Image (cartoon, rainbow, N blue to C red; front, side, top):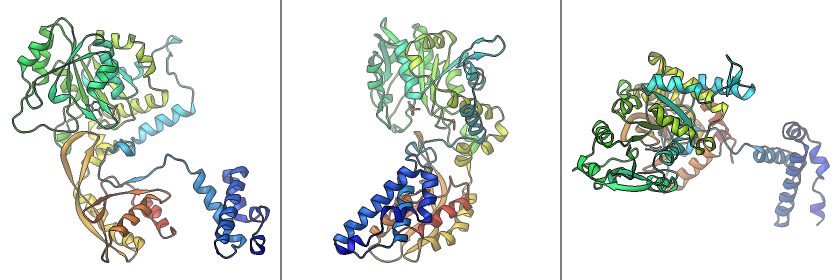
Length: 463
Ligand SMILES: *Cc1c(COP(=O)(O)O)cnc(C)c1O
């Protein structure tokens, strides 16, 4: 008991320089709370036989505690997973132009729904409509919160209390519980499945389309491929079939790129312009997948159908705010200059980054990283495979390079998991991937080597 009384008081600890500095940053209330918590922890430890803790140790403990507890929950990380569009890490990293536009939109009043020429009320979607039409060849366009919302809104508009005809091979589930049959049910559309899992023919669609059909839907099988004995009806043929029966064709592209990825050494992913040219009446796609912008869902296509979509009361519940619209406009504008697109759009720059360039980064980082992880691990430059992610070209991997970290001793599985945990616990967490007894840091998405090493240097300070 007497020992416990030798612990410094809250007041004494609070007067220490580090605590006063923490209080300046995080506020008095939270800092005092941390001091009390630190004292309580010391008291508890002493009851179990620990020695008395001095005032400086308590002070730095309290400062670290308040720092930890007031840290934002949404943290920036180094994405070294090798998945460029990682849904759990926020998908696309935005272009500098988009960051600037969004920042301005946060700071200032914006002419969001205000017609500056006439001084009257304007239209929010009008801000990006022309760009979307220019880049996709569509007559009209509108924008909502994400592509899941775009699909829901389109089905609710065209197929409520009517039938939606879809191939069995395209009834997708994508991450985050987006299942096409469930979305249809929510939109009040009756799903009519045609064909079989591996083969759907023109005659299957023809037999299924009738007086109750509201829409024929084509869905890009973003995250899987059916291979072998397969048959699908292409967009152009399906448009002809639907139009001959007076029914609109909707093509949900998912990722929906605006450029031909073959020009960047990647596989071919259907472009929005191709889907429009094939005759789809509406095309839906995401803003934060291959397009490389903020989360958004785009609906482009025929004018009268877009007008119906915009008249749907649900549209109002799915609208995007000024910050995102600013980022969308700036991102789309980059596509007007294809020559400089890969230099300006991080998603495309990362996807197109040559392996040799990434291997050079790995060679430069190997020694400093080895020094920081310490002698219990071997660090070597290694070939690896990146993925696009977010359901684009699911089977296509991109040759990449990085660092493979392995425990130097035996029985290192636990040591490796511990290291991965310590990397995730850094002030700027480093997220790699564990693969076959190694922690792989794929360096495809690493832009700032010096910043990365500076962030990693906190590893030494970690317990
Ligand atoms: C990703 C995807 C969606 C959902 O898009 P979000 O932008 O994630 O809402 C819908 N359909 C397909 C085919 C997709 O690939």
